Amino acid sequence: MKITHCKLLRKQQLKLLEYFVLEVTARSAADILEIQPNTAMLFYRKIRQIISHHVELQATEIFDGAIELDESYFGGVRKGKRGRGAAGKVAVFGILKRGGKVFTKVVNDTKTATLMPLITRKIAPDSIVYTDCYRSYNALDVSDFYHERINHSALFARGKNHINGIENFWNQAKRVLRKYNGIPKESFPLFLKECEFRFNYGTPKQQLKILKEWADV
Image (tube, rainbow, N blue to C red; front, side, top):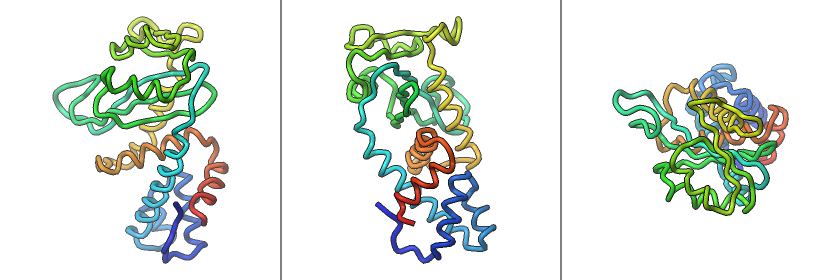
């Protein structure tokens, strides 16, 4: 999947790629380059589609070793139900290999029946999985994994027993998405994979090099 049928000059495409990597909004990038905002937004959307395509191709990679699991909720604040499963929010499940990559998936709910198939497909048996005390992870106690829990009501880390890595990813993702002041629900998976890409591919220089290759710009 590449950028095709783009009427922008290659020089403009390269600049838009740079601005995308540097988290400059499409509207601001359009203003700097003196192009139509819709043109820049369409280009950004194509980049997110390319990212999602390539990240999903890599989703078959099996994680092993020390793994952190957690779920989070994205979306605007609404009155009513709070906490896990807050009304109107999008539920996302995350798996992070310590010292490696993160994998995310939008889920309909965070029940055991939803999460366990994702866990068993993505994580090698005999791996050490770290979670908090959410009840959906109870099934891990009788699984092929070594399960460690951290009770967040008491402390956030006890030696190697923590989920600070995946929580750091959630914080980073929400910081990136906050500047958009609301994302349509149907577009959210693309933005989520963008956050996954940014986390997994380190520096802006590395991200730009990869995107040039993926987009063939």
